[in-house]
Length: 431
DNA sequence: TCTGGGGTCCTAGGACCC
DNA sequence: TCTGGGGTCCTAGGACCC
Image (cartoon, rainbow, N blue to C red; front, side, top):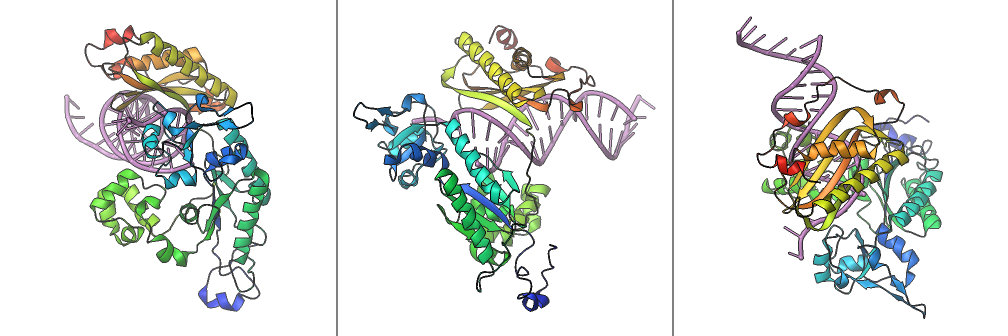
C-alpha cells in the first residue's frame, strides 16, 4: 500500500478509515541483545544468575566441574594479563565493572566477580538463532554485528493498526512479538527501540534496558532525546564529545541549539553538518540488507612487549602464524585481496600502519607474509612491540572482474618513504 | 591497573593521467 | 618554461563502533 502524505488537515478526518496516517513513512527498529555474551554464558551456568560475572580471559579460566557435580569458577582476582572485559552482567556493572575496561583494573573494583573465558563459537550460534527468529517476522534486517540488528518494520502486516485508542498499538504488538520470538528461539532477552530512523532507534533501544521496548516519534525528540548526553548519539565518540564540551555543549539539546556554522567551523563541513542533523533526530540512511567486507585482518597483543632483536624468533613465528590464519580466513570466506597491510603497536600504545598494493590479488599465506615483510622494512623498530597485525584489503572474489591483475602503477614500494637511518640493516635481519 | 580484536569510514597529500 | 584543473589510485593516520 502506498504511504499517505502526513497532512495534518486530513489526518484526523481519515483516522477511522485509514489507521496509519498518524505514523511516519518509515518505522525502523533497533534490536540489541541484553548483555549478550554474559547472558549466553548464564544459559550454560544458570546457577550464576544474579551474580557479578565478567566475560574476558582465556581457556585457562574455564570453570572446572568437581566430582560432586559442583563447579569451581575463576575469579577476577585470579587474572593476570592485558585483556579487557568484553561483557559484564548487570550485577557486575553495579560494581563499576564495564566492557572495555582492563581486567586488572576491574579486578581491583570487583575481585570476587566470576570470570569466564570468551566463547565466540557459542555467541555466533546464538546470534544466528536470534537473527533467524526475527527474520521470520520481519525479513528486512541489517546486521550490525554479533548482538544487534536494525529491522525495517515499515511494511510489516498489522504494524499500523491502532489498538483501542493507541495509534502505536500495532507497533508495540509487533515489538512484543519479535521479543517473544527471540526468547523462544534462544532463551535470551533483548531491548528494542522503534522510531522513524536508525539514529533514533539506536538511542531508543538503550533507554529501557534490559528487556525493554521504546517507541518514539518525531514529536518525542525534545522530551526524550534532547536531555541525553551527546555521547548517546552513535557516531559521537570520546574525542568529539570532549571537543564539544570545550564549546559548552554536553546535551543533545545544546547541540541542537548550536549554530550550524559554528559546528562546521569546528568539525569540518561533513561532520559538522552531520552533528546538526543528528541532534535534530534526522537520518535518511536505509536499512542495508547486504554488504561485502572491505578488509579482513588478524592481530594479536603479546603478553609482554617484545623486542625486534631480542625476541626475533618469537616475533617471526607469530608473524608467520598471523599470515597463515589470515590466508585461511580468506580462503574459507572466498576472498582474495590486493592490498596487504601491517600494523604495529609499540610500548606506550603508539600505533603505526604500512601497506602495499600488489599487482594481483592473493589469498596465499606466503605471498601475504612477503608483502607484509616488505612493509615491515619501512618501520623503525627501536621500541618494544606490543601488538602485531596483518590485514588484507582491496578484496575480490577469485575469478571476478575486479580480480584482474593491474599493472597501472610503478612499484614505488620501498622508495616511497625512506626509513629512519640506522634501522634498515637491523630490520632486514629481523622477523 | 594502562587500554582486545575485528571491523568501517573519513581525511589528506602525492603520484599519475588526461 | 610555466601554469592549471579534474579524477583516481595509493598510502598513513585517526575516530568510531561492536
